[in-house]
Length: 217
Image (tube, rainbow, N blue to C red; front, top):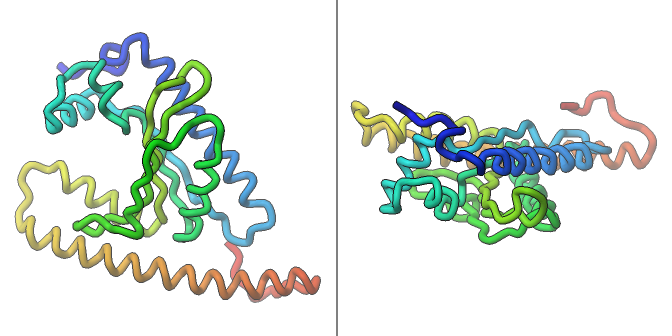
């Protein structure tokens, strides 16, 4: 029988939920601040989660750690997770810079899989953070920031990762890598188009003559 969140995390669960809610609030603050005067919204959406007991125990087993709550809380940096999905690549880095300056948590490690993609083609920016304040002080979390294009790819790749038996697995993974590379190229092209649009929009705003023909999202 699978353990419930309450059974596995016990008295630690309220503090974990508090950390999750705090991370979402911080992300919302960026959205509100960044959208002021921006033509295209930088953040599409945010999601959060506390790692399920089953997922936590499986990861502990894969890593060779003890399978209990104490090990999950001390060894798994992604026990609490926040995902921020952005419109463009430069939005990813701007969100990251903004988060690194926040006083509520300390950034322990940054993994830039955009500059240095994983072998399977995965591209994202990961921040491993440690909460500094409040009832969640000391808890660790992982913040993933990526574009909506790679988020689409990663959702499918994640589902395949945990399937025990996949027919034509080698071919599928090869195709996924090819798609990831194409998505990365599209991400760069879309950012170039956005920059051209925004440059014209900014100039027109300065002149007090916004063009009706500009794309608005």
